[in-house]
Length: 307
Image (tube, rainbow, N blue to C red; front, side, top):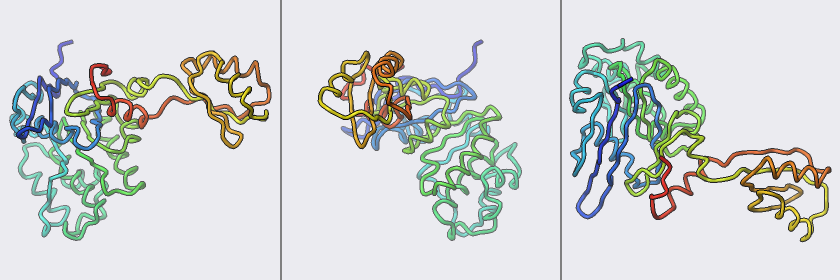
C-alpha cells in the first residue's frame, strides 16, 4: 500500500548563525499515528515543528505535509496547531476566539463542538484576558481543532495544567485520535508520551537519537528490575551470592527491600527462588521512560540511535 505520509521531513537542517538547532532530521509519519517528540531543552523540538509547518525556512532539506508544501495543507484546513508562541486576542471571549478562526476555514467544526472537544463549554463566555494558565491551554486547543484538521501539532500542550486538567485534556485528545487523525506533540512530561503516543521520536542536539514505540525506546536501557522483600540477614556473602545469579548486573538492599537489575530476569528469578524461599512481594518491572530518556540524550554520539 503506497500511502502518502502525513509528514515527511528530508535532510531537514536549521541554523541560526553558528548554532545548529536542527541537524539533518529525516522523518516520515503515517496518517493516523500519534507521535511524541521528546528531548531536553534546546534539542530542536519546537524548531522542527516550526519547519514542518512552514513557519521557518530550513537552511537545508525539505518538509512536506500530505505530499505537498505545508502552506497548501494549511490553506485547505487539514492542519491545526497549538504552539507555545500562539496568542489569542485578550478582549475576545473563548467562544468568539473559536468562531473567528472557524470563519477562516471551509469546513470547520461548529463552535459548540470545538468547545466541547476541548472541554471549554464552561469558560466559553470568559474573556481571554481573564483565563488561568490551564484554561488558556484548553482555549488554544479549541482554536486548534475547530478547523477539523487531519493533522494536529501540539507544542507542550499541557504546560500550566494541573494533574486533573492534564487528565481531562488527554481524554479529549483520545476522542480526537480515535477518529484516525494524525497528532504530533512535543512534551516534557515523559509519562504522557509513554501513555498516549504510538511512537516516540527523541531528539538530542538537533538529531534523532531514537525512533520507535514506547516499549522499543524503553528497551534501549537493557534489563529489568526485580524487587522483593527479603527475610534473610544481609551480609557481604549474601550480596556476593546474589550478584553471582544468572543475568544480574547490580544488587541493592535497603530497609529489607532487595533490588536486582538483570539482563535475563526469567533466569535470575528462577535462581533467586531456588536459593531463597523466604522472599515475598516480588515485582518485575521494565525500565522507565525517564531512564531511557537520560540514557539516549546524555550520550555524546547519536550513532547508536534506535531506528
